[in-house]
Length: 169
Image (tube, rainbow, N blue to C red; front, side, top):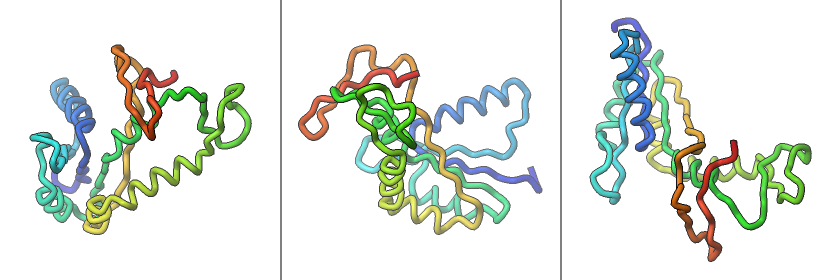
C-alpha cells in the first residue's frame, strides 16, 4: 500500500494474538492496512520467536517518519504483577479511596516506577527507540482474566509462596 502508514509491531509471544486477529480480519475480507507483527527471538530461552534482534533493527531502520513502531516487550512482567495473590491483600490505588478494607495500599506511582525502571534498564528497547525515525508507542497487554492457572500454579518470590490465579474482574 503506497502512501499509507506502515505499522511495525515487535514483541514477545503475546504478539501472536495480534497476528491471529489480523489473519481473521484479512480472511473476512476486511482491510488490515500495512501491519507487520514480529515475535522477537528470546536469547537463551529455546527456539521461540520468528525475528532476530538484527532483523528487528533492520525493519525499524526501514520505517519512515510517518510510520509507527509498536513495542510490546513486558507482557510477562505485567502478567506476573497482575496475577500476584499475596497473603496480605493489596490494591494499586491513586489515592486512599476505593481500596478494599484491610488492604495494603501500593501507590500507582510505585508501580509506574517499577515499569519505568524495567523499560529504561532494557538496553535493546532503548536501541529500538533510538533507531526509529517515527513515533514509538509501547503496548502492555492486560493479565489474563479467565482460563489461567486452574491447576493452582505458584512461584516463590523472596522466600514467600505466591499463588498465581485469575486476575480480579
